[in-house]
Amino acid sequence: MPILQELPTELSQTLAKHRNGTGDLPIHVAVQTDRLASGDFGSRWLVADANALRVYTSDKDGTKAGLDATIKLSEIVSVRDEPMVGGGSLLVKRKGGETIELLRYGASLAGDMAGAARMIDALVTGESLPVGEEFGTEKRVCPKCGRPLPSDNNVCKACLNQGATLSRLFTYATERRGLVVLLCVLMIAATAAGLVPGV
Image 1: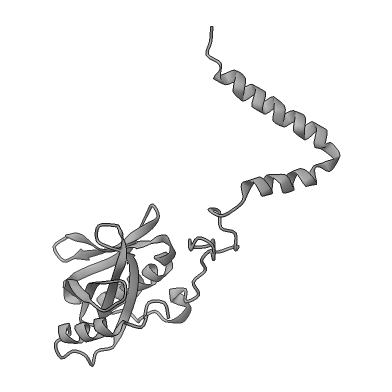
Image 2 (image 1 turned 60 degrees about the vertical axis):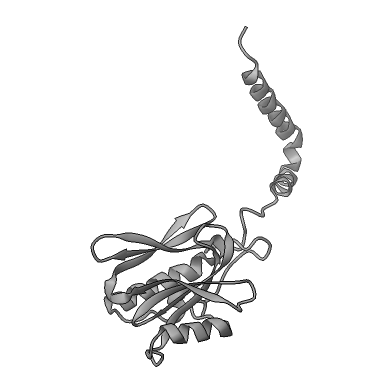
């Protein structure tokens, strides 16, 4: 399940200390992000049980983990993921109206973070916890760039070769190739004429 990833050994030990005897509570969310609080690339972890949310920053090899934030679920009103350019952020609304940014993530983790937000929101509100396909357990991302794929096809718009697509369209117009070429030349000429400053 994407929102319950295996924690590095050092982080597991650090987490056990911070849970202060509540280690018997099951962990519902354990997900790694690829952005630091500054927005730079780096490794952070979001861990949530029925008691609190915790955010950790770890080094590349997972040998060190520092606690960045602890928020008790009793202090939270809601959790939501906010899309941003190239990724998004997880926002927590606390009692009293304050909204804070819990962490940031890259575009390839949008599905995992949406699932994490739904799980945490269910923990906060006391609703039944979402399971299985409600998280979108299958990560559909482009194998070339890692961006999420559309729900209805496997074509990544960022990696689409537009030149090859145009060339393929021309093969469908073989009977009227001369007319298509003439049309393209006229469009280019009209654009060029529009760029000439008036005399």
